[in-house]
Image (cartoon, rainbow, N blue to C red):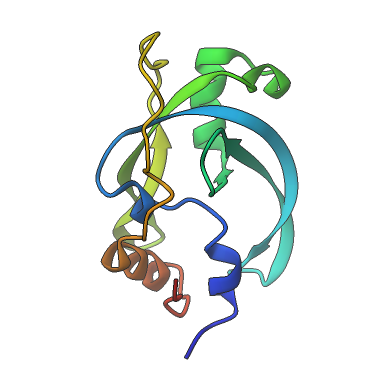
Length: 143
């Protein structure tokens, strides 16, 4: 069965896309978009980050936005053109522990260090994605 949520989730970055590696990226744009919330079954406006040269955007919650604010200030329009480093880690969701997620390192990448090539444009890590889908009570999506 191919669940309809797979059509939405494929658009956004997940820990499965990073393949266990840090990924330095340049923020290309920041916008607010309605995103389907699988828990409430409603759409909610979320902060979405787009990256130069990357196919997938990232839904950025308060933890990610706070990390970026710590480096580049609270004016999200000033984040455009700034570099950040994404890394895969885990979080707890309710009673479930160790759910894969993406976070932002609290320090800016070194000057002159190029953005990571390829990462986030490659096939996803299915095992990691399935673990996250299960934690959020979603049907595993297909890529």
